[in-house]
Length: 80
Image 1 (tube, rainbow, N blue to C red):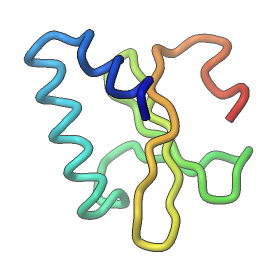
Image 2 (image 1 turned 180 degrees about the vertical axis):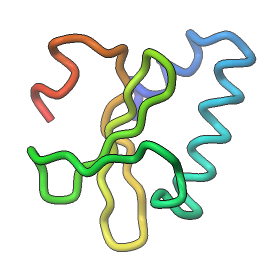
Image 3 (image 1 turned 45 degrees about the vertical axis):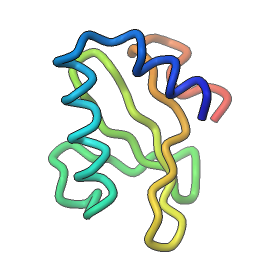
């Protein structure tokens, strides 16, 4: 969780607000967010695109667990 907090601190105020709004929507109902895709590499892993960033998260029961937030590159989906 420290990496995610550090990442959010490095964003501009507007980007920070956009991410927080997305996190709130994910908590309410991640399936209602356009562009959410189930990943083939994990049982309950999903990703959502937000500009050049990818948010990788897992769904455990009714809870959404954010695993990784990264800029899209060749290493994005490795080491999940």
